[in-house]
Image (cartoon, rainbow, N blue to C red; front, top):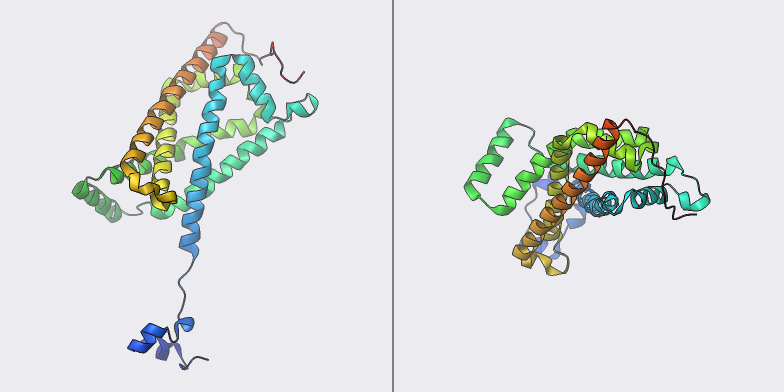
Length: 264
């Protein structure tokens, strides 16, 4: 039972040495909100899942390098073609919708750390110029790429949700051709930089298995991953663009009919 009758008495009390040691009245102290901690965990978890998705997405889209049939069969797999020999478009929508929800949650949680005024931005810039620390530079890059992705990511996923039937080697190539190389390359660089830097910062932040002690090695691995992902994505982008250009110029824009169907 608390010895204090009012909050004024409780919080105006200066603990004695014994109270500080034994924690007297500690159970009566007001607890801070756990919301920031939960938001931080949510941001980290969604960021980790989205970074893993980037690797899966790169493997998926790059499959066109092995031929249109390979890409078509992978799309058919994600659409449940293996169940009954029919493509279920709602499965595409569900998968893309799930990724979109992760993106939204991650963005909302990350907004807590964005500068919301000119004064905050000025303080961050002053801090950056004063320290010139590489991790601070990476954080600035993440902010810039986050702003870029905010304006581009939903333009990327909306057509796939509204027209899931267009997930096809030919139609995806035509879509890339109409978007242009510049738009696609900027989106690619922003995505991979944001994701790979995010993985590095997560490893340092949570320090699982003491991995943060090898920060320099982690940073080098991150650089290699960025170059690899952007390089692989650039080759894939050019393949889609070339296919799309040929289809448009020859007026042969139509859904692809596979020569090899893995499910028959």
